[in-house]
Length: 117
Image 1 (spheres, rainbow, N blue to C red):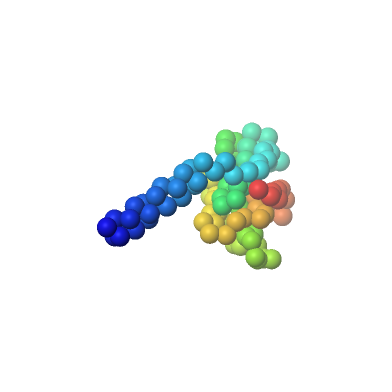
Image 2: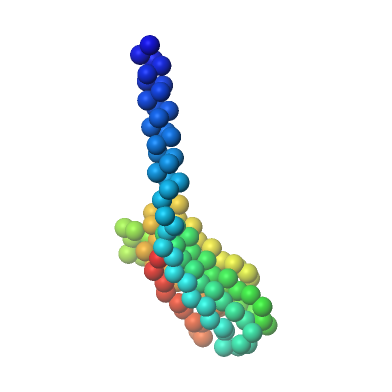
């Protein structure tokens, strides 16, 4: 009899936790859009939320990649840059992102956008 009560209690706690997780509101996010100087038809979109940062490049004739890096809770240093010809992404599944930086090329004329979630 005691064993079934323990199982019921554990099951009820698991259900309660899943309801709490599912009912949590959406995380705050920030974004910015810009066009690269080398060709006004090359669009970049920077986005950051509590656990993911992306820079997306679309259209245009610019050769520059999309770049992104993050700084997480408890750290005063930036992480390494990630790059991609389409969407660069950095994920922090455990620590919350406190800032992200996004750029449109790895060059001296890069526009760098800094966002906070």
